Length: 417
Image 1 (spheres, one colour):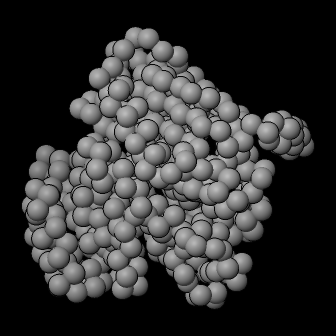
Image 2 (cartoon, rainbow, N blue to C red):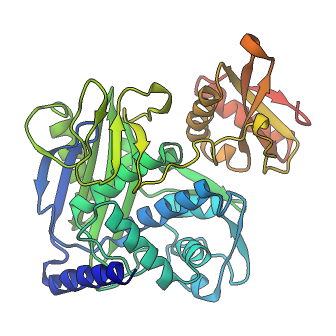
């Protein structure tokens, strides 16, 4: 432990000593399947991350969910310190609570600083202690030039990162939490009667984009990390230090347009992985993790199948995206109305359907819980893909209507069917 703390101090000293390099323009574009860098400008220059910091806060939140430390419905008390965070925020009064799910959507869609602080205090005991957890995780993910001071990205001279490190974090979110990663595609959510719309405007106008985060402070300029799917390809882009939101978005769009056509080209430098048609793929910059294209049952939409090794502990794949009755775990939702959207031959197949539907349904499914239910035995066994816990028939019908517009079948089932 002492040696690890010394290493963190050394990293901090290195970072702070190079503070004169902060707040320059930087960018990086890479192919997420092969890890090849397609374009880079000042990729290792230090910049303030601003709200891109919340990507790490969300990573640790997803990790805590998978470990069972918290659940989606776990209440988080809004402390006076968290409630006093400046906008943007959810605006919850000190002493009130929000759920983990509300906090996650708040950070993704609203970039809510109070939600980030509430999560940090719940998981770390204090925001300062949580920042230490963030830095420890950053080291394990190979983010060698990143140092966190708070959970939100609010201005702090010592809080710095690079375009390369932010790309590493984006890859880690996709790789380690492919189900939860889909939440970054949410365009809005309903919070206590208010509909909150996201401000990642590029996501609404650039075809194929599925996330992930924007950020801005006076010191950082306008930042963005983006991911775009184009057929079997996925490209990650990072732009830091933009002079305006429009300029940042236009630069990202231009870089993506330029490189989408050659995402699988042989030229470029390796950041994450080198593709292989057989067996496992060695990972560069992410020690202890191996990527494989051979296990279709665990392949995420990015085309990466994950096999976590010692430095990236394996997480249960069915929590929190689905609950399987056969495991003897009771659903967390309290409402009686539910909907069924499909059946599948395997539990994993049902969970995949639910995760994809959850992304498509957006805010209409916010109050419900994904749930798999077993029917039949032997070769006739099927897994029903359902959302449970709707507070009213109207809420369930509304969700069905939205899902049907997105080509899902949907059947209303009262009182747990």
